[in-house]
Length: 48
Image 1 (cartoon, rainbow, N blue to C red):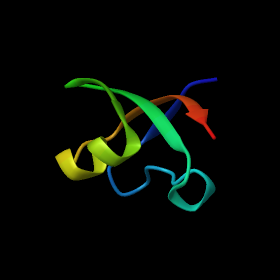
Image 2: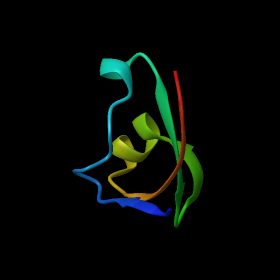
Image 3: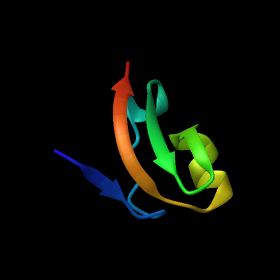
Image 4: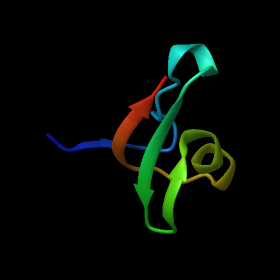
């Protein structure tokens, strides 16, 4: 199952305590970095 998240829809894991790893057009990055870069992408996994 592929889950894509727009920049406003990037999920917060455990209220910000965990991280989501995304594959974006600028490479693989965490949810926090993707939010600051203002880009979305494919959610690869969650780490909590």
